[in-house]
Image 1 (cartoon, rainbow over the protein chains, first blue to last red):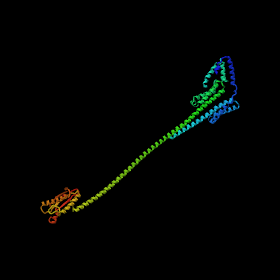
Image 2: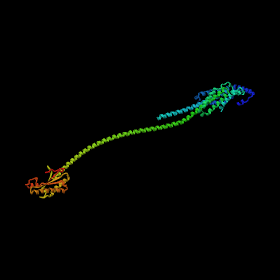
Image 3: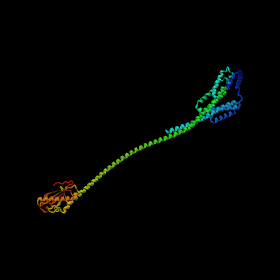
Image 4: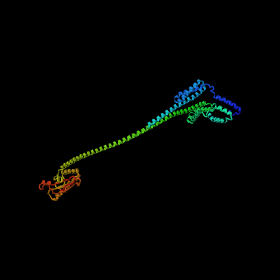
Length: 133
Length: 348
């Protein structure tokens, strides 16, 4: 793609290119072009937030979970305002926040379980050591 | 893959920047790529931060091993962010992608942590079994130790008991010895008593013997004289002028022989006497012969010849007057002197 742009060398082409570039530049800085409603993204993100909630994200990863909730709410509001581009961004971020909250909650639970077992083993060993003394 | 494209793209971009003066088309391309960010700083802080956290996660073997998929997602998003940044797609878009990439790195890290913990849980089960096994082993060892100790104690107790038993035995032996000694003493006493009794019995027997002897001597018509017991065989027991014993004399000699057999320690001296009738030599010879006749009779009855000695005295030592017949008769006699128990006879 770039090479195609680099290759032409005629002045005519330069002028045309500059015009195109300007148009593109303007287009880039212009307000969001019409974006379809991110219904699917919203559903996926909502489900992720629900999953995070049932995984105990609120308890084990409160910051991430709170962020996911807030972004989801904001996304819903943007949807209501028909600001779909914003809604999509927020929903995407809410999705990773929720997923992180869920992952953190699950890892925290697993670590708790592992620690409990290790503690059990430690107690058991202590008990044995005490018994055998 | 996209990540690999990042550097070449950047290089290409900078190279084209240097050639902007001469190549307007390149300018166009730059304009297209950078979008609104013509005046944007060369680096996006959130993108840099995302890269840094991604790099740190990638250098963690736990994450690369256990959360490879999650890490790849983060890498993909990061490439998109880089792409967006290099294409100049506005700070908001880059920040958005960088944020997502950063969170995805977090997800990868949490996933790795969770799986590590889950492995630990699985291992804990095995570890618990191991510890339990150790516990059983330790318990068994302890039980064995206890048993050994109990055995040692029992052995010690047994030794003590043995020692006590030995002491008891020793005491018992001492008691037995003492008892034995007492018994011995008692036996000694008893023996002494018995000896005394035996001595008494002996004395009684001796007494009896003496009495019997005396009775027998009395039967022999023995008379007690200074020289001992003397038996006198009178003239009537011999034929006149003969040295041959009459049957009555023989009976007396037989009694004497029986006596001598009963008391072998006694000896006898047979002395012959006559009256004064006849010549001295004849009387001497007659007294010899008569004494000898008694001796021969005793020898015939089984008395040893060395126990009987004879002596003829002729008409010497008369016991009566030779002037009367009765006197002469009493002078014709044989006297038998019985020795003491040692065989001694007092000489005349």
